[in-house]
Image (cartoon, rainbow, N blue to C red; front, side, top):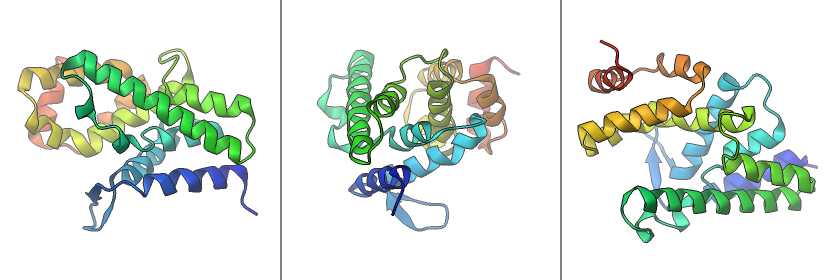
Length: 196
């Protein structure tokens, strides 16, 4: 019989697998976009946290749960619209994850804790929330940064890198600087960080 963790993880990944959008992986195969994102998030967790428990593992895996259901375009343009969309998404993902955990017989306390981590409440003060944020930043820098930076105006992209860097722990900074980057991406990071 599967454990509560295995049951919840499988349920999360089943929902990720319903994403109609796809991502082409390095080996040329494709995968539902949010499932690929979730696996990348999980892949970084042991690098940024010394002893992640089941609740943190589930929260990290579910951070973008069914994000495609509420497109960014349904919110106003600009930073306020973006932040409102992102907040609403994290509440929805947290609530859905908590429900899946309760169905697998996790306690209310554990389910609420996962929702709190997904909502990033306590960033900078809570080690688990920081670990989730570090994973998200590293996944962005490793997998999406180069393409994203080609679509965004240069000075705005420098500010995005600076904001991303401020949210990361020193440990995540060290890991980020080991990522392979194109010359253009590396130059952008150095400019953002004030390096020569």
